[in-house]
Length: 75
Image: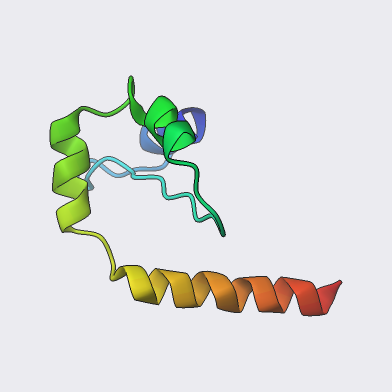
């Protein structure tokens, strides 16, 4: 994801915009994989700050379930 975020910030982002943020939505989680993925890329300060600004967890869960149902119906 870092590759895409860097490309977006270099080539698309306007000077008055904040740096891009990537979000990966998954239907299941593995805490160890998340920790390994984020450990070098984000400081604990940034992670804590980001958690304060997250969309409601239940809303994200509902949207993910909705997307899964749509994808299952297409197949």
